[in-house]
Length: 317
Image (tube, rainbow, N blue to C red; front, side, top):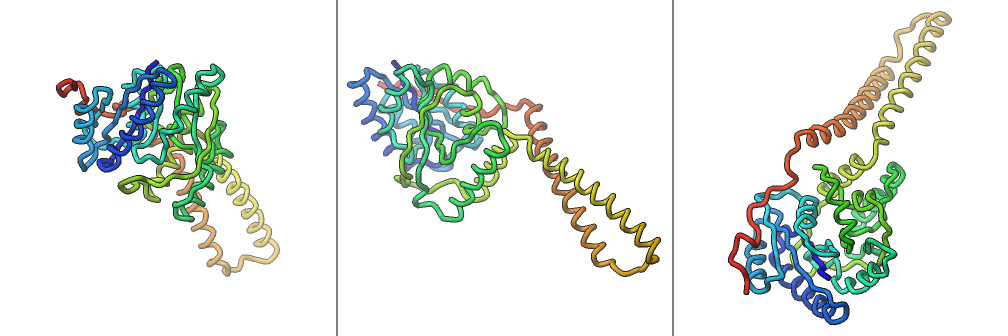
């Protein structure tokens, strides 16, 4: 039984050795308890520090360590997809290098899959301790909004840390879309999932690469990728304003017939014009976002480009 650990890395030079030590400790325990072999796949997402150098060193030290290095930064979603493609295991886990996803949960997660009742063991945080309060509030709002808009359930607090059967991994890989939102994809493919809850864990080293703007763009990816409700909102707004305009026309005609045609009221007219124009631009922006995603998909560009793998280096002892 082979278990693949897929670890996307962007500027994780400091965290990678610590992750390897902890993951190797868990792997040794699971070798004794479950007879499981491991491979560690680090995906270097165009890092600017010594992440690639560290991956090379770990591979030379341990032949179980493999790596995929991108030609530039393609994003974490591309890193997850590349790691899943490279994984050879009967079971595949995706987790972060900063140890916010505790490898110590892997034995229990594997026990769940070995029962045959589940194809996925996933994790979710029960707290957001250590995060700025405003960021936590927006995160909770995002999950509420997307679950109201989408037929695909996105679990609040869900992490990318999960252990999957080969059947589920192949299903995820079959969704080769360019604009990826893994939390939604994992949910969309289905399969029975058991959730493991744990409290938030601080990073062991380095700094987070996610700021408010990047998280906002990521949330837009999720909403656009798994819901067409914003298009319905735009259409609904158009219908409402058409009705309002028709009522307004009737009001103006009746007022002109009954009271004449006074010239007062131009400030309110300006406000109405600005409001309608703003709504039109907003709805155009929604349509434009979907059109942009379609444009990127139809070009069929590769999700990532590989610059180097462990196979380009001398074999480790």
